[in-house]
Image (cartoon, rainbow, N blue to C red):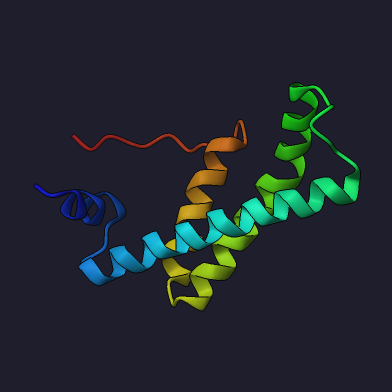
Length: 107
């Protein structure tokens, strides 16, 4: 089984083209987040002189939410709104404690 087939199975999609579009969305989002981090950190006056843990905390509360917004926006632009809506719900459900629903096993 190829990597593309594994991604299609994991993500529940049929088309190889859709896999490539989704990967392009992730790439665009990553690059945008890099530029956003530079811009936001400059606006906040965060430099490399700050301790790593402070930069990490600031990153979590500023760039991580922006990444999710960028991911959704790029997903909509590239016509994959439904996939990224479900992807973000699943991802955010893992980040928020106490919001998980237990899967019921069928006998």
